[in-house]
Image 1 (spheres, rainbow, N blue to C red):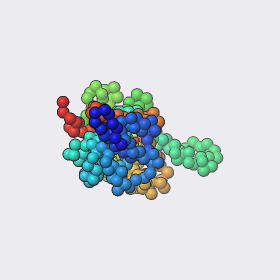
Image 2: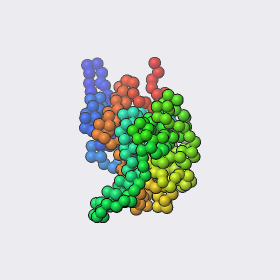
Image 3: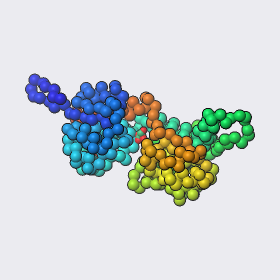
Image 4: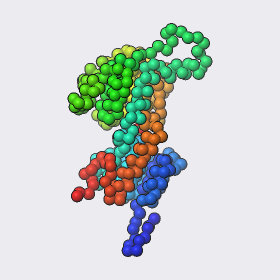
Amino acid sequence: MTAMNAMSPVTVPRVLVARQVFPEVVARLRLHFDVCSNDDDDAWSRAQLIERLQGCAGAFITTGERIDAALLDACPDLRAVCTLAVGYNNIDVAACTARGVLVSNAPDVLTETTADLGFALMMAAARRMSEAERSLRRGEWTRWSVDQFCGQDVFGATLGILGMGRIGQAIARRGALGFGMKVVYHNRSRLPDDQEAPLGARWVSKLELLREADHLVLVLPYSPASHHAIGAAELAEMKPTATLTNIARGGIVDDAALAVALRQGVIAAAGLDVYENEPALHPALLELPNVVLLPHIGSASRPTRLAMANLAADNLIAALTGGAPPTVLNPEVLPRG
Ligand code: DGY
């Protein structure tokens, strides 16, 4: 599409919105761009994604589209890739930077919503909520009994957090301030004292974390370094009464090893929102009573998802109209000065 002014023709950049997003966000993008939007939310193959990106200067993506060197080479007009997620393990940022392609993600706006879900999932696993509800729905609740669905306490227990970024700290706040939990964490870098102190949070080694946590919550980014950070060996270090909650990314947990550990009582229960090959699940997980399974809904409240989409739009608009993208991951590609 070409808009004309009195002096010269101005080419309106073309952008692709790879998944269905909120119409009001697409409408905002249409004020600036020629937008091709996947409004039917069709499942595009990689070849279809590349085909639709031809001639596009911008890509508005989610967690499912893989942006790597081969795709970038096949889409030479691309200048900005903006994801509505905070996690960006599906984007090869170095390959983008090498080609001058700006990358942005959507941090902060989802922190509290995702922490809420993480805490709820941890509680559901500890208190066997899904298992109890499934039993009730099957009509098995015929009388109250003293040891029925007895789980683990959350209040006053030791909350372990692997990955103490913004979401990890928000979960720690909930545990420490709302539930009187002791907080231990492991992270590449230790928090400054003034952030640790209000939470009573204590940095420990990964092994100490595994051994001390009553409830271990994973909130670290996925990378080759964190692949299978929790496998059979790590699970074996945990308490048999412990729970494990993963709201970070599939692949951080070895799902097959976790299924074996849950079946054998190596740990008591798990809560999972993300999976190694999602949306496919390891079949063994589906057979187990002591795991709460959610379909990657950590940030899924309407206001938060809308804020994430608007932030991605802010980034895309700024990136392609000479503005300052608010949450750019590779600022080195921005024009200097
Ligand atoms: C993220 O933002 O990374 C979430 O996983 C998507 O909800």
